Every structure is written in structure tokens, then in C-alpha cells.
Length: 263
Image (tube, rainbow, N blue to C red):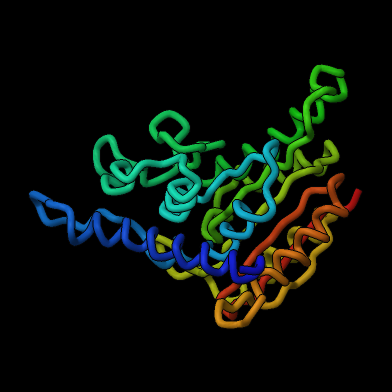
């Protein structure tokens, strides 16, 4: 099996398992009050392709990832496939003692790098973690440690959170680098539908902070090799920009954009 087929097959398993976790919590598991508690299938599934590429083809041991809250089923499914999560935990998804609805370093048993239950804070955490990494290396306190990339997978509605914009300003002040942000622009929010065309404002905002923005085409599951080609393009771009922070994103017409701040 070649790499594109390999990734597509893994993605199918990840998507099926994450969808089953939510369905099981809502419909199959016993419930005294009948309330549906399983979470958000669509806003989780919208990151299946990107997270499959990240965890099975791109990430290195020193990299750290903040997964957006509603993508936790995808994260737990990936960790189950990697052997870091148990069947009992995913069967108890969103139940007491089970896999958490939002990734948690203190309550989850799988490999959570950043707790992201407080919306927006995980995003800012990756930025400041990168600045701290640079500080330690500048002080020769971590010169023998591999340099990691800090990745944030962001829901588009998370960009309503003011701390993200405060973090962007601090990153610009201190020469942020080695940071990837993925904006999952699916326009789904607990409050409302995200305003049409907001992705253009996001693009303008990052350009105003000195970031380079590149629009990427849609990644379609049905297109042979598309996941591999998109991964290869993105990885090549990112490997060239280790000294720069980087942003991915998606919008409702299924366009994907990549932004990175220049050195």
C-alpha cells in the first residue's frame, strides 16, 4: 500500500471511530434522563483529514499540539489507533472517568500536550510555549534538546476570543517562530453560524501582523492522492519555514489557506 492510500485508509478509520464515539454516547450507552451528550460530529469531522496528515505523516517527537475542543473525538480516535488510548475510555466518552469531551492533560489518559477546554487558551499557549522555548535556547538552557514546533488546531469561532489577538501581538513583538496554527473554518459555532466571508478578515488580520498567506485548494477524500499531495505541499512549505510561525485554515467553500510570518 502506497503512502496516499495508507493515509486515506487511516483517515477512514479515524473518522468512523470518532463518529461512533459520539453516536455511542448519544444513542447506545444507557442514560437515565435520555439527554444527548456526545458532542459535535460535524465540527469534529472537519479536522479528520488535517489531523490524520499531522499525526501520521508530519509531526515529530518534539512537536506539541493543542487540539480544538470539539475535535477531541478525532484526537481520541487517533490516540486509540496509536495505542495511547483504551477501548474502555472511548466507550465512556463524555462520561465520568472516560475520555474527556475536551482534551485534558489532567483527566485524559492519552497523550494530551495542551488542555484546551477553556476556548482560545490552548491557541495562545502554543505561541507562548514557542517563545519560552526560544528563551531557554537563547540562555543555553535547552541547547541539547531538539527544537519543537508548536501546533494549534483552532475552531473558527475560537477567533472570537480576545486572548488570541493579544497573543498575536506578543508574537509579533518577540519574533515568534516554529508555531503552526490551523483554523478549521467550518462556520459552526455554539452561538450562531459564523459570518459569511469572515475568512477574508482572518487573512487580512494575519497579513497586517506581517504573516505571509497562501490559499490552498480543497482536500477531497474522493480525489486519489489528494491528501498526500496536500500534506507534501504543506510539509515542504513548513520545512522551509522552521524559523517562522505558520497558519493553516479552511472555509465553508472548502478553501484552505496557509499563513506564515516572515523571518
